Length: 451
Image (cartoon, rainbow, N blue to C red; front, side, top):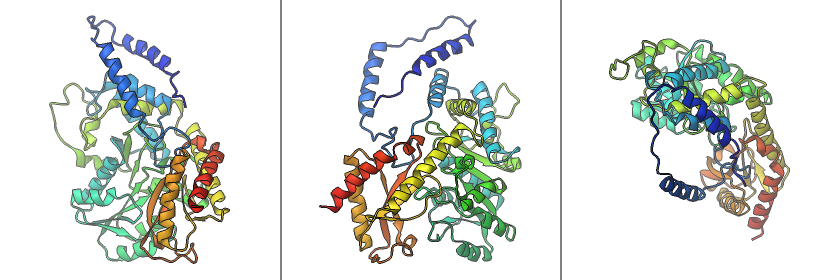
């Protein structure tokens, strides 16, 4: 396939416009050894060809897709200056653009007042949210479902916060009965609600957890790193939709624009409903704040140096595609979800496969039919490899057998976990390519089953 490169002419025009902003300075032209630069860059291109085709619709594996051209161009343009959004003095324009971009993310969840900033990704964003939670509820336990991202347990070890996983129900949601039992013990400070788990795309039952919050004293942190942007989508099932409709009631939210927000890595965001939590960030560092009395983003962030280019790219993307219901981004995510539903239905109607969890977002998990869990795992891995030979790149996920015992009748559970096939249909083009995807999957599956 051809890489999109026609937009490079736009970048040249934008660079000329950027240069005009610095007219009047003494003449200075950076020296570049273009011959050596060309040789190295061509070598880079050669090395980068040794990758899975993350940008192609036949890649349906991990949560990877290319940024939108506007984000790519805005990021690249900003690198000619390379601002640092730790302080306004290091990123005057980009800091203002970050505040505007983050405010749009907050308004997406219905928050007119908030405290928030961009981070290097979801891990640091979640760390900051749990750090604030630990300050507000010192010594109290943080809990998350067994399908929550492993980073929460690891973050709590770093922060010296007690942590416990909660079992999941057969839909990979946090088990409410288990949650109630833990809350009865009275030492829970924070419940992490996952809005789109990494493995299955499952969405925890937030409305019911909010009701429990009214009976117990704990914070709710929504890890919406993956699924947050689906708040813009109108084709969710009613139960999932009810969770998105009450996200404004949680205490903190993490969302990753480098997933569904069309941004390059790394661009995460942490949002707090109560701006007063900023008091925990307070510090004095006169050597970085030397000419401005405005709020520096470094004063509300655990990270220090942060790329202004990430903020500019996000701002530019929002300018082109505002993050509002009914907009272009929501329309594209609607296609991704529709593609996931279509693939799931095709799997359900094929006797070679055992469909698993009904997709709530755009992730589909399934497995080949077999008599034993160990055989299911073996066949899943074999089909995964055979599909790659057909240029279809999927993923596999090891999941607890307990998730499937009620669905997979007649399977002998000879191991605790089972390996399933997993696909993330996060590109809008996946809807048009379902036929090609199915054809490759069909060929790979027949090749494995007919050995």
